[in-house]
Amino acid sequence: MNLADIKRLFDYTEWANALAMDAATRLSDEELRHDFGISHKSIFGTLLHMAGAEWIWLERWNGRSPSKDEAWQQWSTGSCASLADLKQRWADLVESRRQYLSRLDDSSLEKVLDFTLLSGATDSMPLGYQMQHVVNHATLHRGQVVGMIRQLGSTPPSTDLIFYLRHSGPQK
Image (cartoon, rainbow, N blue to C red):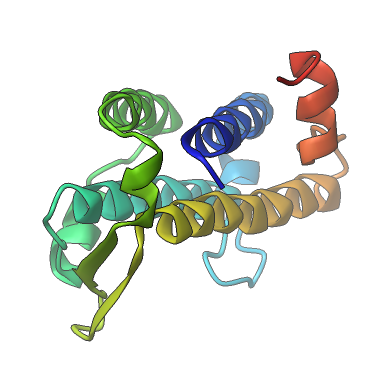
């Protein structure tokens, strides 16, 4: 895995997240917040969790591991109550991540970075693996969002990687 691959994976994630957010904007507030009985309850809760997780990892890459309380304060329905607010905060986060990625080179991905989990346990792994996890995590939860949209009787977006690759044209 090299930096070009990582950037492509984040481009894919941003493209697919935008499709999920666009689909969410077409739902009523009741549909958006309907409790489906899954881990983050609703479409809104799942999208909020996705953005919050991306923020936590970016903070870790910048040398700071937020606590569970801080993450909750930053990325809960109390601090981010509307889809419009979430969309803006997520866009700001994506821009910060792009700036971070612009400062890296291939060798940066091999560097082992220490971090503290929300549980308080410490861990470490190469930056490239952490980044792959962030992309995979988003894919998992977008799948849940797609499933919830389908359960509401709406047609969800196609967010699989193959659709992004077809959409983005020939790969280098």
